Image (cartoon, rainbow, N blue to C red; front, side, top):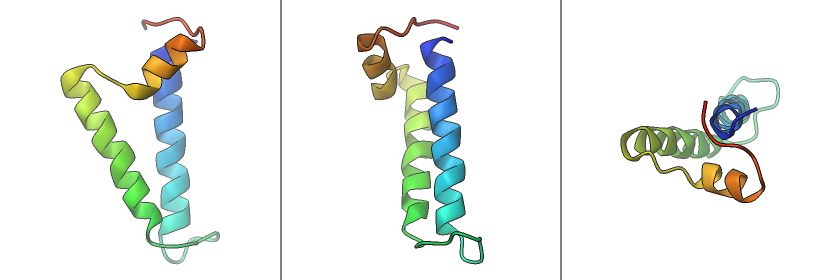
Length: 69
């Protein structure tokens, strides 16, 4: 699995989890502040698409995960 696949997996998982925790009426609602985390992940995805710089990818490469698609 390449670093970009892992980045997408993390981002998708974090977005879905924070939506589940942040939307009132969901079975495991905790706080609407979780939606701020959703916005943070989305903003990071947006900036990484424009700048091609992603902190998680840098961390994964240091851990030995191969880059590329």
